[in-house]
Length: 229
Length: 365
Image (cartoon, rainbow over all chains, first blue to last red; front, side, top):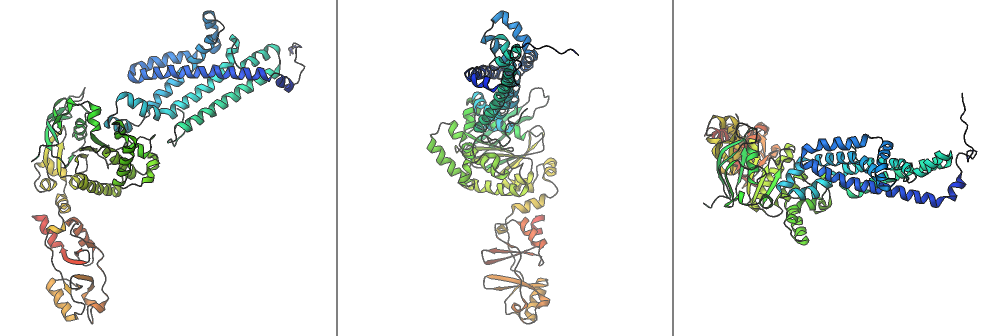
């Protein structure tokens, strides 16, 4: 067995150096905030694009298959590879990060929006039309609110995925708390690796709970909350 | 006669990709304020016909007029806001409260908030729900309550015409019976023009002022009042559709008040065994009723009378009918009672009784 010889930078330290963390709280908050901004933009832009794509797919059914192929291909590209391809074009920018992050949310969101609208009870739709609802009013006042539990379920999955993916964008100079993981790896400094990982997990759980709370507030009528598809 | 509220002239509907029409050349009129029931086997186009009236289905040819206006000249949303619509699966909006559900059409019509609130409260009373239910969500209500909300919602903007597509098809028979009674009660007060679709001939007979019996392909086999259809079916199809118990169905349409009642074997409380025997022989029964002036207290077996009739511990009649009950209910009472008669009271006043012979005389007529 060959035992790898570790560089002697800070590796003789204990597994977690709390004093290092206390000494760098400003940096921690900065990276957490950056992480949340990257995630928020990705989900916001992703949801907007997904709503447009879903409206397209619902209006013209034949577009649904191509839309899921394209977003499905985007979803299946390894994130590392995607960022590597994008850097020569868009550089080490937030734009590069968001192109990747947004494209990973689309498949999940489009599928859940379409499934949510499709899941609206046909009797509700018939009653609404029979009372004189028109297409647009029907969509925004009846179908979309009723699809909310399924849409938010999709948003929760997309949200947790995005929190994880943001750490990867550390490789292109973004990354939120991924910054600590990357620098920790480079310096063999376990405190930073653990810190970055834990923060990422905490953010994912917090976002998931926050979205669950949003769902409860928005759908007080729903008996079966947060059913995922 | 006033012009019809709804008029169908040579209406047909062929769905795309189907060879034969769902409805072919259908014409009939519906008068203002009447309940017309469309009934027939599946595939007879009854629901299609109903949906053509509010343009949820567009007729392939022919014209439909509502209140004298050709419906193709009205935009579908405006047309539908003026026609109440109730469907079997109700279709309440799960994300809106009962109050909001009932106020749907008024708010689409742009009524102000207070007017909607007052109207909703009025309708909650009208269909027999509690005001406290207004803030509940549909999922918290029973099926029967939900359908009452469905009816209230259809009535909200006070439309002259109500379309009802098997509205009571999904509730259990007891609740269905109650909802049917309530609909008839409502109609007494509101005088809407109602088009009602069902596959249940008994429901059609019970609710319809007139019944349209449709055959596969939207062929109108007979269109008449229930009694007329039952006594004179137009053709073998109608006869078969009405079923073997056509005569019994006629009984259910005949109220007791329309037939003559027999006084029956009634004796005074002081009657002796000899009086009782004479009365029983005369009526060919083995019991007597005991009555004073205009009421009857109960009955006894003749063999139990030793002293006077009243001393023989008379028992009350288990079922007391009123003149509003039907001969069908009288028949039920006859076959389920010890005495073999149906006794009829108006409040406490004894009106008389019906025997199976009297009832069967109506069957053969």
